[in-house]
Image 1: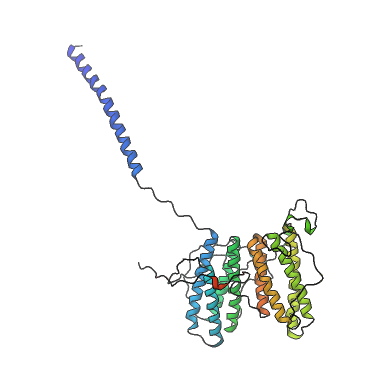
Image 2: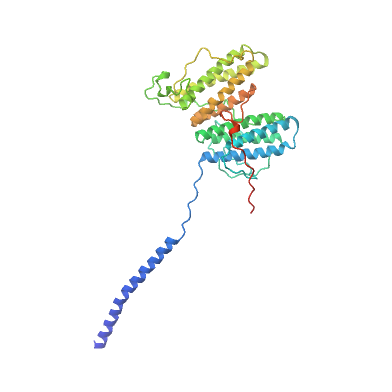
Amino acid sequence: MTKWSVVNDDTREKRRRELIPRVALLACLALVVVSLGMALRPVSPPAPAEPPFSEQARSAALTDTLRLRAAGEQLGRSTAGDEKAAVAGTVSLLTSQARALLVPGQSVPASLPAPARSSSAAASASPSDSPTASASVSPAASPPPATAAALATELAASASQRFADAAESDGGMARLLAAVGTAQLLQASSLAAAAGAPAPAGPDPAVGVPEIDDLSGNCPGATGSPSSSPAGASADQDSPAATLHGALAAIVRTELESVYGYQVALTRMDGDAAVPASRQLTRHESLATDAEGLSRVHCAPVPPREAGYTLAPDFLASPAAGLGALEASALTAYGDLVGLSDGQTRQWAISGLVGAARRSALWGAETGALPGLAADPQEFPELPEPSPTPSH
């Protein structure tokens, strides 16, 4: 090997050694640039959380109520006589219910979507059917009801959806939705009668009673005595029904008092009035037995049956009005049970609320815009002026 070759090889080796730090430096610089680019890249905001089911159910109820109210206002301009008065009563009811469903500060759209219906919201659905409720579905376009009979059908369909959503909502919202649905169902029947149409299909209060034998209550240490349950204090006669046990005890007492009231009323009634009274007496006897059975299932103390109950002083003079007041007084008890229970017990309570409201109407008692809720409509927030629909 020549001397030149050795020198040339040494030079190339020296250059390679000098390039290594430079390559390493360039690699580090490249990593820094890449990391800075990743750090400076804007992070996509997280998707907003889906509202709880109870909030979805409230929003759907408000939308349906406002839509039916607008349809009623439009229909009221083209009707007359009894039909016009019934439509006006419907608009008044829906106005109160919309105010109850409104969140303070919430805006009202100028134009409302078509009714939203889930697979569980068929007009013939019953609160006892245990549907899988869905308050968030794609609305299906449909024209507003053109007649009072059509509006009555829409009211009944809305009531069925409220019952389905109440079965799945939180306690307080369940009670509100059940009250809204009950009043809408009653108004649907009144509106259909004024229009000379058959009453629209709706929940049957005789349906939905849980099969007591199919439920299994596990009561450790229970001796069968009403005082053996730790919830005995909450079920006391003078204490509010703030627990499930207390609500069940209140229902038992209410139904036993109703049985007594009907027995007394039948001694003073004859003719056409005695027939429905006798039928409702049988119904209340069945409800009392069911309520006692549910109490045992939930390990709640069962109030003892008494020989008699105190009735209003004018009950004997006007037994029909007395029965109406007796039925109306049961609404709050069933409303309590709707809010404090779940599952089959809540289904039974919703059916009981509907039945008590129907019987109240049968005897001429007022049930209000929210049966089962002790609420003053004057305290509800006022409906705001509709906000304009944004143009595209």
